[in-house]
View 1 (tube, helix red, strand yellow):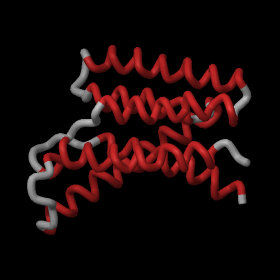
View 2 (view 1 turned 90 degrees about the horizontal axis):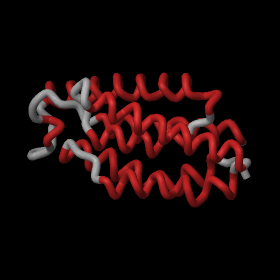
View 3 (view 1 turned 120 degrees about the vertical axis):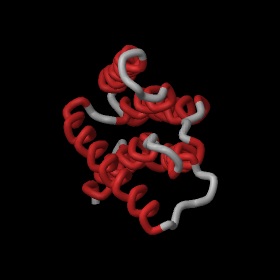
View 4 (view 1 turned 30 degrees about the vertical axis):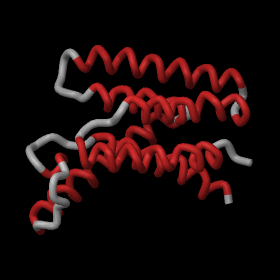
Length: 157
């Protein structure tokens, strides 16, 4: 079995909840980031070579540290940083550029979707992502991880 299949199956519910939660409340709770990270921690050693598993964990730590530095320099949410650090170990090191491209595309699609829904007056009442100017980046991060893992699953068959 390809490594992406169990990671996609196990992380998908948490990604969907994170996207929904960020759209509705403009925050990603810590328990979601921890859950996504624990999926990788638990499943990773069973489906990946241990050296690759460890290297990916280390990259997640680097993303967390770099994100914390960015948090104090630019307006980015702490939940976004923690979620990004939690999902980054899912990405193979040779595919970081592809993942960042997927993240960029899901961000553009997210912005376009939110603007279109606002313009059409089809926004859910009370959802914070449709009020003000903040963007729910968790929506894009969850989408990028789903696309990344889904692409690996599809190409396996």
